[in-house]
Image 1 (cartoon, rainbow over the protein chains, first blue to last red):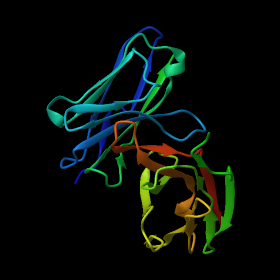
Image 2 (cartoon, each protein chain N blue to C red; image 1 turned 60 degrees about the horizontal axis):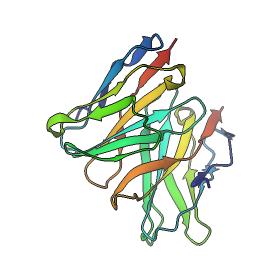
Image 3 (tube, chains in turn cyan, green; image 1 turned 90 degrees about the vertical axis):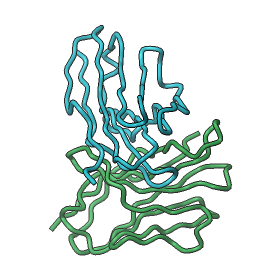
Length: 112
Length: 118
């Protein structure tokens, strides 16, 4: 069991550029979650997948954000036309059904 | 309305002492789950302990125990015999049924920064 991995760990981009993050969940976990955490706050839910189906999206998730989980394995989170307000830590978590969620190390995004 | 409230922005505890981190929650669902996570400076969220709303006994995991008082809607984390490595942010979180009818997302509090001193 290698845990949840996320790539890249850090990303610096200019405003207006597109970025994509990848999350590899624990292999036997069927649920995958994306959260965003800003400084001094707890993580906020963005979206979640059960297998390949995206079952819920937060109202925080604007049209510039899209997430996929092809084949129910790894997931990608894309942010188009980044804004400075998108700067945050993006956390991925996975679980087997309703059990506890295990988090990856996160991707820290800085938009300049 | 805030669903998870952690009123202690920061706490200090001496090594080997016990410490209680407070968490209150708000929900109208009869079925919910409460979690505590630890976030060291490295940033990774580490699962510590879980309490289900129907669990009769308080959850325990090693040095961690959850003081669950359902009527008061509180789920305080007790860390016994504190160690220097316990210094971190601690987040309380709740899982409820979502509008899709599935129990999925976690709602987190703002966290408590614990500092363990010699």
